[in-house]
Image: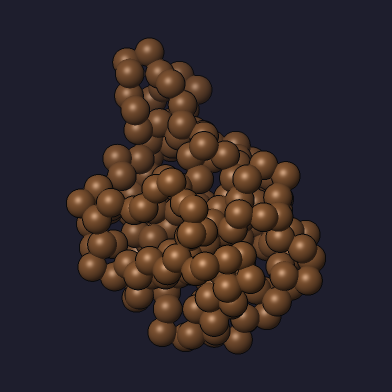
Length: 195
């Protein structure tokens, strides 16, 4: 029972805070978070984003709650993120800024998340994080011998309130459950956090 409880909290993002994810697997990490958060979901993209979330490929229940915003420029992107974070009705705000976040911008987003009691996740490029972020994750897909395309390595590199670590997980992309994968390749029980 203790192991299941620890796994449920392992990948949960603290509410009313802004977190960051970087690496090639950051969108998969964001989709897991979207599946774990209740309520409307806001995804803010740059106007030149090369991808849009595909509704049919999203985890169960996410497509019906997802609202995509594509502001004209970086200033409007940060404004849209800040205003979305201030809304207590929003469950999760995901954003993909094109430029590095300044300490001032990061702090403004933290204050907005606190005001709205909303969780934010900034999908950043390597080295573009803000010192104001609560946590910073590095997310990467992992190749395996059995060609299992659902393996991921998620590293918690920064955590203002706890420990850091590296985990290899199996996530099927359809639910809010992940399985921890041991070094020997044995899967542990599912870790699911309903919100």
